[in-house]
Length: 295
Image 1: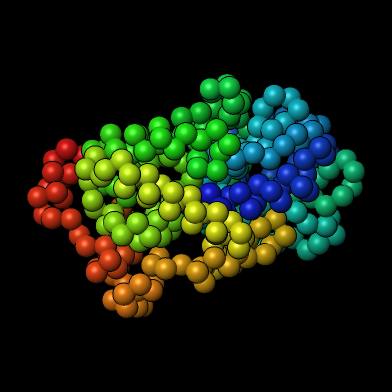
Image 2: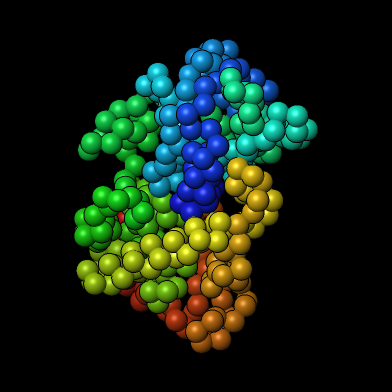
């Protein structure tokens, strides 16, 4: 699933190309693309037609477009979802799932999804701490790029969690936007192993880790995000290039950029974690056992 930098790149492109435009028609070409919209494809198309797209917004890894009628189109990108802005006469993509045409006859918005894990849905907006969010996103915490993000509160929330620090970083109800890639990169920069107990980190160390996560995501955003294949692209179909700057993620057996030790890959929550055995020593067994008992 794309993480904060990748989603922000898509959000900026959507806001530039579709905000302020009115929907003329909607074609749902695959039912799985709107399976989260429980009333079905016909309802989705009818309710979206005639609405003006007000603004593209994001919280953490979650993306939506505010509508003039007081709802939002919530986009789940999944593993391969793409929001593309294409000329109306451009050939259809092989995995085109939803097409949105506009009254100005300009470029259309297309949702393309090879694996069909993602999808679109209409959602009501609810007010949370002075911000309007789609109801399914209401429980998601603010992310480090939010103008009113409170790093002290986020550090306190991380340190209260009785689990491994990497699990805490990935908990979107504590701090949103950080996924597997940028968690590994931040942990490497902070010289912390992901199995370290979150509640045993000092406040300064937890703050340092969070600052590293913020920095690495800003750097990734500056390079258009991280693309490992052709599935993650911006609205113009272009890939990001931050994968070339990754220090540990996906770098198994490559030398650590600090000490030269081969990078290690370990299983983690049906995924993988990458770390340097020398720079990021595993916690003592007693610490890991304590986490297992309490978390």
